[in-house]
Amino acid sequence: MNRKAIALLSGGLDSTLAVRMMLEQDIDVIALNFTSVFCNCTSRKGACRSEAVRVAEEFGIPIKVLYKGLDYIEIVKKPRFGYGKGINPCVDCRIYMYSLAKRYMEEIGASFIFTGEVLGQRPMSQRRDVFRVVEKESGLEGLILRPLCAKHLKPTIPEKSGIVDRERLLDFIGRSRRAQMDLAESFDMNNYPCPSGGCLLTDKIFSRKVRDLLEHEDTIATKDLQMLKSGRHFRTADGVKIVVGRDESDNIRLRNLCQEGDALVEPVDFGGPVAVACGGVKNGTKTLIGRMILWYAGKKSEGKGTLRLITDDGETTFTVDSPIDGNIMEEMRV
Image (cartoon, rainbow, N blue to C red):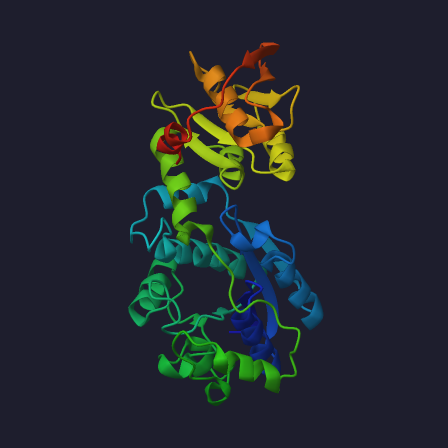
Protein backbone atom coordinates (compact mmCIF):
# COMPACT_ATOMS: atom_id res chain seq x y z
CA MET A 1 0.00 0.00 0.00
CA ASN A 2 1.39 3.38 -1.03
CA ARG A 3 0.68 6.92 0.23
CA LYS A 4 -1.40 7.95 -2.79
CA ALA A 5 -5.10 8.54 -2.08
CA ILE A 6 -8.23 9.77 -3.84
CA ALA A 7 -10.09 12.63 -2.15
CA LEU A 8 -13.79 12.99 -2.87
CA LEU A 9 -13.77 16.78 -3.00
CA SER A 10 -17.24 18.30 -3.22
CA GLY A 11 -16.06 21.85 -2.73
CA GLY A 12 -17.75 22.10 0.68
CA LEU A 13 -16.10 22.78 4.03
CA ASP A 14 -15.97 19.17 5.24
CA SER A 15 -14.18 17.70 2.24
CA THR A 16 -11.81 20.69 2.15
CA LEU A 17 -10.84 20.03 5.77
CA ALA A 18 -10.35 16.33 5.05
CA VAL A 19 -7.94 17.18 2.22
CA ARG A 20 -6.00 19.55 4.49
CA MET A 21 -5.74 16.87 7.18
CA MET A 22 -4.40 14.28 4.77
CA LEU A 23 -1.88 16.71 3.31
CA GLU A 24 -0.74 17.35 6.89
CA GLN A 25 0.05 13.62 7.05
CA ASP A 26 2.06 13.78 3.80
CA ILE A 27 -0.50 11.82 1.80
CA ASP A 28 -0.22 12.21 -1.99
CA VAL A 29 -3.74 13.50 -2.71
CA ILE A 30 -5.59 13.43 -6.04
CA ALA A 31 -9.02 15.06 -5.92
CA LEU A 32 -12.13 13.67 -7.59
CA ASN A 33 -15.22 15.85 -7.95
CA PHE A 34 -18.66 14.62 -9.00
CA THR A 35 -21.26 16.88 -10.55
CA SER A 36 -24.64 16.42 -12.21
CA VAL A 37 -27.66 18.30 -13.49
CA PHE A 38 -29.18 17.73 -10.05
CA CYS A 39 -26.44 19.59 -8.20
CA ASN A 40 -27.85 22.80 -6.82
CA CYS A 41 -24.35 24.23 -6.57
CA THR A 42 -23.80 24.14 -10.33
CA SER A 43 -26.81 26.38 -10.89
CA ARG A 44 -25.35 29.47 -9.23
CA LYS A 45 -22.28 31.67 -9.43
CA GLY A 46 -19.52 30.52 -7.10
CA ALA A 47 -20.73 26.95 -7.48
CA CYS A 48 -19.23 24.02 -5.62
CA ARG A 49 -17.77 22.60 -8.79
CA SER A 50 -15.70 25.75 -9.25
CA GLU A 51 -15.00 25.75 -5.52
CA ALA A 52 -13.63 22.22 -5.76
CA VAL A 53 -11.33 23.31 -8.58
CA ARG A 54 -10.30 26.40 -6.61
CA VAL A 55 -9.55 24.35 -3.48
CA ALA A 56 -7.50 21.86 -5.50
CA GLU A 57 -5.50 24.68 -7.06
CA GLU A 58 -4.98 26.31 -3.66
CA PHE A 59 -3.67 23.06 -2.21
CA GLY A 60 -1.65 22.33 -5.33
CA ILE A 61 -3.25 18.96 -6.01
CA PRO A 62 -4.60 17.56 -9.29
CA ILE A 63 -8.36 17.24 -9.72
CA LYS A 64 -10.60 15.24 -12.04
CA VAL A 65 -14.26 16.19 -12.53
CA LEU A 66 -16.73 13.42 -13.38
CA TYR A 67 -20.25 14.12 -14.62
CA LYS A 68 -23.00 11.80 -13.41
CA GLY A 69 -24.76 11.27 -16.72
CA LEU A 70 -27.69 9.33 -18.11
CA ASP A 71 -26.55 6.10 -16.43
CA TYR A 72 -27.19 7.84 -13.12
CA ILE A 73 -30.81 8.44 -14.15
CA GLU A 74 -31.42 4.70 -14.01
CA ILE A 75 -30.42 4.84 -10.35
CA VAL A 76 -32.80 7.73 -9.72
CA LYS A 77 -35.57 5.74 -11.40
CA LYS A 78 -35.19 2.58 -9.33
CA PRO A 79 -32.90 2.92 -6.31
CA ARG A 80 -32.28 -0.34 -4.48
CA PHE A 81 -32.10 1.42 -1.13
CA GLY A 82 -35.00 3.82 -1.59
CA TYR A 83 -35.47 7.57 -1.51
CA GLY A 84 -34.99 10.25 1.10
CA LYS A 85 -37.46 13.05 1.72
CA GLY A 86 -37.68 13.87 -1.98
CA ILE A 87 -36.64 11.68 -4.87
CA ASN A 88 -33.05 11.52 -3.67
CA PRO A 89 -31.48 8.03 -3.79
CA CYS A 90 -28.69 8.97 -1.37
CA VAL A 91 -27.40 5.49 -0.54
CA ASP A 92 -27.44 4.31 -4.15
CA CYS A 93 -25.81 7.58 -5.17
CA ARG A 94 -22.96 6.99 -2.71
CA ILE A 95 -22.46 3.46 -4.04
CA TYR A 96 -22.42 4.79 -7.59
CA MET A 97 -19.83 7.47 -6.80
CA TYR A 98 -17.59 5.19 -4.77
CA SER A 99 -17.68 2.54 -7.48
CA LEU A 100 -16.46 5.09 -10.02
CA ALA A 101 -13.88 6.36 -7.51
CA LYS A 102 -12.61 2.79 -7.01
CA ARG A 103 -12.16 2.42 -10.76
CA TYR A 104 -10.22 5.70 -10.87
CA MET A 105 -8.18 4.67 -7.82
CA GLU A 106 -7.09 1.47 -9.54
CA GLU A 107 -6.45 3.32 -12.79
CA ILE A 108 -3.93 5.72 -11.24
CA GLY A 109 -2.48 3.29 -8.70
CA ALA A 110 -3.81 4.93 -5.53
CA SER A 111 -4.29 2.87 -2.36
CA PHE A 112 -7.37 4.26 -0.65
CA ILE A 113 -10.15 6.89 -0.76
CA PHE A 114 -11.04 9.50 1.79
CA THR A 115 -14.00 11.82 2.21
CA GLY A 116 -15.34 14.62 4.39
CA GLU A 117 -18.35 12.61 5.57
CA VAL A 118 -19.27 12.98 9.24
CA LEU A 119 -21.17 10.31 11.16
CA GLY A 120 -24.74 11.46 11.86
CA GLN A 121 -24.55 14.59 9.74
CA ARG A 122 -27.07 13.44 7.13
CA PRO A 123 -29.87 11.12 8.30
CA MET A 124 -30.07 8.90 5.23
CA SER A 125 -26.51 8.47 4.00
CA GLN A 126 -24.15 9.25 6.88
CA ARG A 127 -24.98 6.48 9.31
CA ARG A 128 -22.76 3.68 10.56
CA ASP A 129 -24.86 0.96 8.89
CA VAL A 130 -24.97 2.87 5.60
CA PHE A 131 -21.20 3.33 5.66
CA ARG A 132 -20.85 -0.46 5.85
CA VAL A 133 -23.34 -1.06 3.03
CA VAL A 134 -21.66 1.48 0.75
CA GLU A 135 -18.20 0.01 1.37
CA LYS A 136 -19.39 -3.53 0.69
CA GLU A 137 -21.43 -2.70 -2.42
CA SER A 138 -18.63 -0.61 -3.95
CA GLY A 139 -15.93 -3.17 -3.17
CA LEU A 140 -14.06 -0.75 -0.91
CA GLU A 141 -14.28 -2.43 2.49
CA GLY A 142 -11.58 -0.97 4.72
CA LEU A 143 -10.46 1.47 2.05
CA ILE A 144 -12.70 4.48 2.75
CA LEU A 145 -11.22 6.79 5.36
CA ARG A 146 -13.35 9.49 6.97
CA PRO A 147 -10.81 11.71 8.77
CA LEU A 148 -13.33 14.00 10.48
CA CYS A 149 -15.15 11.20 12.31
CA ALA A 150 -12.66 8.31 12.11
CA LYS A 151 -12.42 7.80 15.87
CA HIS A 152 -16.08 6.78 15.95
CA LEU A 153 -15.40 4.08 13.33
CA LYS A 154 -13.25 0.98 13.06
CA PRO A 155 -9.68 1.55 11.86
CA THR A 156 -9.30 1.38 8.08
CA ILE A 157 -6.56 -0.46 6.21
CA PRO A 158 -4.41 2.69 5.70
CA GLU A 159 -4.60 3.30 9.46
CA LYS A 160 -3.70 -0.30 10.32
CA SER A 161 -0.79 -0.24 7.89
CA GLY A 162 0.62 2.90 9.48
CA ILE A 163 0.24 5.09 6.38
CA VAL A 164 -2.27 7.27 8.26
CA ASP A 165 -1.77 8.16 11.92
CA ARG A 166 -5.12 7.44 13.62
CA GLU A 167 -4.17 9.61 16.60
CA ARG A 168 -4.26 12.66 14.32
CA LEU A 169 -7.78 11.90 13.09
CA LEU A 170 -10.92 13.37 14.66
CA ASP A 171 -14.17 12.42 16.39
CA PHE A 172 -16.72 14.85 14.94
CA ILE A 173 -20.32 13.67 15.03
CA GLY A 174 -23.78 15.07 14.31
CA ARG A 175 -25.21 17.86 12.19
CA SER A 176 -23.58 20.92 13.77
CA ARG A 177 -20.75 22.48 11.75
CA ARG A 178 -19.31 24.42 14.69
CA ALA A 179 -16.40 21.98 15.14
CA GLN A 180 -15.58 22.18 11.44
CA MET A 181 -15.60 25.96 11.53
CA ASP A 182 -13.30 25.97 14.55
CA LEU A 183 -10.96 23.57 12.77
CA ALA A 184 -10.95 25.79 9.70
CA GLU A 185 -10.02 28.73 11.92
CA SER A 186 -7.15 26.74 13.46
CA PHE A 187 -5.88 26.03 9.95
CA ASP A 188 -6.17 29.77 9.21
CA MET A 189 -8.71 28.93 6.51
CA ASN A 190 -10.83 32.07 6.40
CA ASN A 191 -11.97 31.81 2.80
CA TYR A 192 -13.44 28.36 3.09
CA PRO A 193 -16.30 27.34 0.78
CA CYS A 194 -19.97 26.83 1.58
CA PRO A 195 -20.55 24.52 4.60
CA SER A 196 -22.45 22.06 2.40
CA GLY A 197 -23.59 21.65 -1.16
CA GLY A 198 -27.10 20.90 -2.25
CA CYS A 199 -28.87 18.21 -4.21
CA LEU A 200 -31.99 19.35 -6.04
CA LEU A 201 -33.42 15.85 -5.66
CA THR A 202 -34.09 16.67 -2.00
CA ASP A 203 -36.18 19.70 -2.98
CA LYS A 204 -39.91 18.91 -2.91
CA ILE A 205 -40.86 21.14 -5.85
CA PHE A 206 -37.99 19.95 -8.04
CA SER A 207 -38.71 16.34 -7.04
CA ARG A 208 -42.24 16.68 -8.43
CA LYS A 209 -40.79 17.72 -11.79
CA VAL A 210 -38.45 14.73 -11.80
CA ARG A 211 -41.22 12.29 -10.89
CA ASP A 212 -43.42 13.74 -13.62
CA LEU A 213 -40.63 13.28 -16.17
CA LEU A 214 -39.94 9.70 -15.10
CA GLU A 215 -43.64 8.81 -15.19
CA HIS A 216 -44.25 10.17 -18.70
CA GLU A 217 -40.99 9.51 -20.56
CA ASP A 218 -39.51 6.09 -21.30
CA THR A 219 -36.38 7.54 -22.86
CA ILE A 220 -34.74 10.53 -21.20
CA ALA A 221 -32.18 12.77 -22.88
CA THR A 222 -29.74 15.24 -21.35
CA LYS A 223 -31.94 18.05 -22.67
CA ASP A 224 -34.88 16.75 -20.63
CA LEU A 225 -32.80 16.97 -17.46
CA GLN A 226 -31.57 20.46 -18.25
CA MET A 227 -35.16 21.53 -18.89
CA LEU A 228 -36.08 20.59 -15.31
CA LYS A 229 -34.05 23.54 -14.04
CA SER A 230 -35.79 26.06 -16.26
CA GLY A 231 -39.21 27.68 -16.25
CA ARG A 232 -42.58 26.77 -14.82
CA HIS A 233 -43.72 23.22 -15.62
CA PHE A 234 -47.23 22.09 -16.55
CA ARG A 235 -48.80 18.86 -17.83
CA THR A 236 -52.04 18.84 -19.82
CA ALA A 237 -54.73 16.19 -19.45
CA ASP A 238 -53.61 14.56 -22.68
CA GLY A 239 -50.00 14.38 -21.54
CA VAL A 240 -48.33 17.37 -23.20
CA LYS A 241 -45.60 18.93 -21.07
CA ILE A 242 -45.44 22.73 -21.27
CA VAL A 243 -42.58 24.78 -19.85
CA VAL A 244 -43.10 28.55 -19.54
CA GLY A 245 -40.17 30.90 -18.97
CA ARG A 246 -39.91 32.94 -15.77
CA ASP A 247 -37.61 35.70 -17.02
CA GLU A 248 -35.45 36.63 -19.99
CA SER A 249 -32.67 34.29 -18.88
CA ASP A 250 -35.19 31.44 -18.83
CA ASN A 251 -36.52 32.47 -22.25
CA ILE A 252 -33.04 32.26 -23.75
CA ARG A 253 -32.41 28.92 -22.09
CA LEU A 254 -35.71 27.44 -23.28
CA ARG A 255 -35.04 28.54 -26.86
CA ASN A 256 -31.67 26.79 -26.69
CA LEU A 257 -33.13 23.63 -25.13
CA CYS A 258 -35.94 23.33 -27.66
CA GLN A 259 -35.06 20.39 -29.86
CA GLU A 260 -36.40 18.39 -32.78
CA GLY A 261 -39.99 17.36 -32.15
CA ASP A 262 -40.69 20.19 -29.69
CA ALA A 263 -42.74 23.31 -30.35
CA LEU A 264 -41.76 26.82 -29.29
CA VAL A 265 -44.37 29.54 -28.75
CA GLU A 266 -43.30 33.17 -28.32
CA PRO A 267 -45.03 36.59 -28.27
CA VAL A 268 -44.88 38.71 -31.42
CA ASP A 269 -46.49 42.05 -30.59
CA PHE A 270 -46.17 42.19 -26.77
CA GLY A 271 -43.62 41.41 -24.09
CA GLY A 272 -43.97 38.09 -22.31
CA PRO A 273 -42.47 34.66 -21.69
CA VAL A 274 -41.75 31.99 -24.27
CA ALA A 275 -43.03 28.44 -23.84
CA VAL A 276 -41.93 25.02 -25.04
CA ALA A 277 -44.30 22.14 -25.68
CA CYS A 278 -42.06 19.10 -25.22
CA GLY A 279 -42.91 16.58 -27.93
CA GLY A 280 -44.91 19.09 -29.93
CA VAL A 281 -48.46 20.43 -29.82
CA LYS A 282 -51.74 18.54 -30.06
CA ASN A 283 -55.23 19.77 -30.91
CA GLY A 284 -55.92 22.88 -28.89
CA THR A 285 -52.49 22.96 -27.25
CA LYS A 286 -51.33 25.90 -29.33
CA THR A 287 -54.17 28.11 -28.13
CA LEU A 288 -53.81 26.85 -24.56
CA ILE A 289 -50.14 27.83 -24.51
CA GLY A 290 -50.95 31.20 -26.04
CA ARG A 291 -53.48 31.90 -23.31
CA MET A 292 -50.95 30.86 -20.64
CA ILE A 293 -48.42 33.29 -22.09
CA LEU A 294 -51.04 36.05 -22.05
CA TRP A 295 -51.76 35.35 -18.38
CA TYR A 296 -48.10 35.71 -17.41
CA ALA A 297 -47.64 38.75 -19.66
CA GLY A 298 -50.37 40.56 -17.71
CA LYS A 299 -50.81 44.21 -18.65
CA LYS A 300 -48.12 43.97 -21.33
CA SER A 301 -50.53 42.09 -23.57
CA GLU A 302 -53.74 43.98 -22.69
CA GLY A 303 -55.49 40.61 -22.71
CA LYS A 304 -54.83 39.71 -26.34
CA GLY A 305 -51.97 39.31 -28.74
CA THR A 306 -50.26 37.62 -31.66
CA LEU A 307 -47.88 34.73 -31.07
CA ARG A 308 -45.46 32.71 -33.16
CA LEU A 309 -45.47 28.92 -33.25
CA ILE A 310 -42.18 27.32 -34.32
CA THR A 311 -42.11 23.60 -35.10
CA ASP A 312 -40.10 21.24 -37.28
CA ASP A 313 -42.46 22.16 -40.12
CA GLY A 314 -41.70 25.89 -39.91
CA GLU A 315 -43.25 29.03 -38.42
CA THR A 316 -46.85 30.22 -38.21
CA THR A 317 -48.55 33.03 -36.31
CA PHE A 318 -51.85 32.95 -34.49
CA THR A 319 -53.86 35.25 -32.24
CA VAL A 320 -55.31 34.73 -28.80
CA ASP A 321 -57.96 37.05 -27.41
CA SER A 322 -58.01 36.16 -23.70
CA PRO A 323 -55.69 34.80 -21.01
CA ILE A 324 -56.29 31.47 -19.34
CA ASP A 325 -58.14 31.21 -16.05
CA GLY A 326 -55.49 31.04 -13.33
CA ASN A 327 -57.28 28.20 -11.54
CA ILE A 328 -57.26 26.04 -14.66
CA MET A 329 -53.56 26.65 -15.09
CA GLU A 330 -52.83 25.72 -11.47
CA GLU A 331 -54.57 22.38 -12.02
CA MET A 332 -51.98 21.61 -14.71
CA ARG A 333 -48.95 22.74 -12.70
CA VAL A 334 -46.42 20.00 -12.01
